Image (cartoon, rainbow, N blue to C red; front, side, top):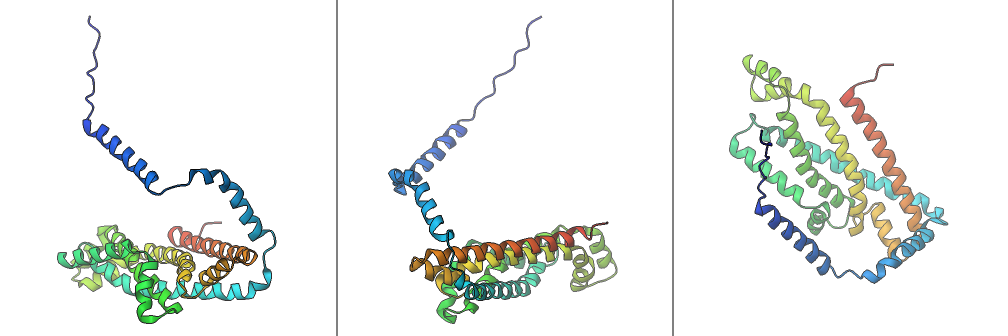
Length: 266
């Protein structure tokens, strides 16, 4: 009885070509950025030195101002989140399959994709030519960017709703608005609320970055003291940013978990 022979698996030449192309791109990327490899050995010592300058003796006298600027960043994030919700929610409902004409769904989804492709910082730079360097500029940039993410999350949540209640609402003669109100929203509401809270978390972090271009908030204060190389104040500001951001993230995560899972039985 002859031994069973296993046929050799043919290797696709495209796999080897792909590996060569990826390797070439990686090598070209490292070569083009002109990394000073000799300085990498000094990097750990430099990082340690700056960490010591920032956190060995933080300048707590600037804490009241830091808290006020942090509050302005949170206000910026909150206004941007609310405006984004008000604009993105109805658009996401229309962009969902089965609730809007095909051409309109295509246009809205393209708009959502284009908005997501542009960072908040670029949007803020465009807006500030009209509104100037004010916290409103940051809030509007966060709102515009939020339309892209909330719109995409929204229509995906609507399309994931079980079809039973939707079919029942349509069979009862409900209009599109009534179907969305009674067939979709009761099931999609927890997901929407969770998305809104998560977007607020993102906006809190992004508001600090937007401060780098001078629209106000804790990021503006960080930029100023970093330029003056007042590292003790920079360290205090970083502590405030980390603590406040972690507290907001923890509170938002607890709320989202309660919304999605309901109150836990004791």
